[in-house]
Image (cartoon, rainbow, N blue to C red):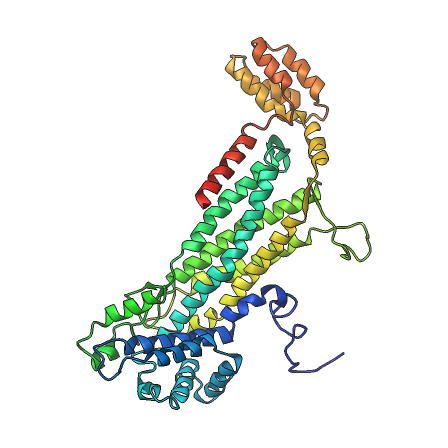
Length: 471
């Protein structure tokens, strides 16, 4: 057995499956949530702050930057490379401070630039490391949410909408407590999920991500010592809002992370709804309501050739569960900090990418599984035809309308715990009822497949309103 230590990192040697087995499925997140991504966002904040100060006319020690210099700074941000990040990590090896390493990296670059070398001491001006970090994480989440996460969950939503529309009229036996219950339609049950998921997606998309930029303990102490006449709260607010973030005015050294916790909770709620869906789809496949289209070359079992396992739904359930465990911890831990600051949030924040990585992995697996499904109408019809007892609800309710005594009890005696209930036994019972002929005919015309209430029409109306809302 190999006892090699410190194996070179590869998908085969990675500790996390996200960087190993599943790296091709979630690698798109690396540009945002990796150490490289965090460093890149830190560089961006430092540069944007310097340029913003240079444009402030009340700071006479800084001249406005020329267009060429602003273009140079933009290129530093836009063309930031892995080699640049490695230079910063090398500096950090000596400083043992990650944000200070970014400052020294920029000073080194600026020292050979005619205009920028005069601005060196205004890099990181008035800042504590948390000013840089909280904005870096906020931008990281904002951009990853808009560019990757929302499009991924929107695909699930659209897949479900298409499935619901295609199956709105297909009757299906309901199961409450695992037992046969009043019928519905496949599309209506899918629409139930869509309604919940769309509401959760709206919340996820709308969570405001905030930032602070007010110094070591949130009071602009150093800013006011250097420039006592400047309105630093306004300068800070305008800078943060220019980045597309919400200004958080009252803070300790750290931004309180309440918005970040809200985002984690919103993601957790979406994931919980999708875990529920994954389990239901697994069950429907198990009883044959859905079939899975086989994929050429795939093997379902090492010994049973016939099997097509619902692995995509199992994968989704498992990975969304891991994501939720992390999201729950993030949401519960991050808003708590001892006095004006402790470092427990710093190490926890580095796991944001893992939480959203497992979420993305689960979302993609679920969407893949949904795309393989094919409705099995004959199996649905067979189950309905074997469940004539579900019409007992309709019969006893009509009996109530027309004043027949103890209708529920009579249907309970007829149907509860009896295996032989069928069309003929129910019709015989209906035939002797003292109800108007029109009501009797309606009951005689009912079947489990037609006893679906307004499931189909409600589904179509819901989908119509959803399309109008999304336009």
